[in-house]
Length: 268
Ligand SMILES: C[S@@+](CC[C@H](N)C(=O)[O-])C[C@H]1O[C@@H](n2cnc3c(N)ncnc32)[C@H](O)[C@@H]1O
Image 1 (tube, rainbow, N blue to C red):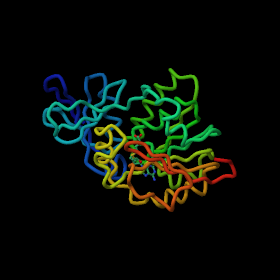
Image 2: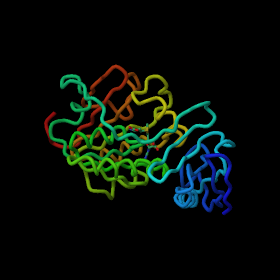
Image 3: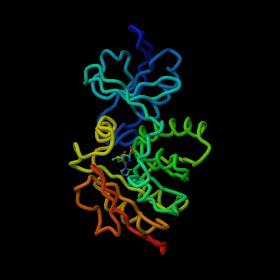
């Protein structure tokens, strides 16, 4: 590894030891840079762990770059002029009024635990935890899971209710071995989501570039149905076809729809 200093953002050139595609993300190539001298050891370790190419100067960066500081991981798109780094935000959203709270209706009255099997950057995950649920968040893109875990640790220090556990792996396998949950929640990539997405566009676009499509979403759905104690919830764009057969219940919002598949003997 060599150290280089150029301007304010500088740093190191480690040698990747693993293929990024299999270790860090399923999609686009990502580089890594330390934002200051103190974070060089962390960036070096991450570079080796994730198999990312280290940049000596963010000025030469193009495309997606994982920016490392001691306290934060951020993803910045250097091909976009003046773009800001995306960090996982665990801060609260405002809940809609009771009658309009589709997610609350989708979860049902007797939900205590949730497996968020497609956790991504965790906006749904943190929503569940803030509602006092025990959440197991599963994400298979290693870099995304690490960003989520960092935010989850920080969140857990502030929040007393709810519990969050981040698992890095494929939910098709993990659902079978993790503690079972009342609800399994799925929000797979939708090929043509575009403006229909209920998520912040920037986070959604980043995820798509990192994770690619989710061609095995139907398999995940089948596994979820076999393992959810009470229900499977599938989040879809409002007018998209269902992921599986016709759901037992549907809650439609302006841009998003929750399809509910009952698996237990609980009442609706
Ligand atoms: C549309 S995003 C989910 C966004 C998320 N609900 C949020 O609030 O940020 C889909 C995510 O699920 C992940 N994913 C899809 N299939 C998965 C699987 N079988 N196991 C684990 N993660 C999966 C993808 O890598 C991607 O990050």
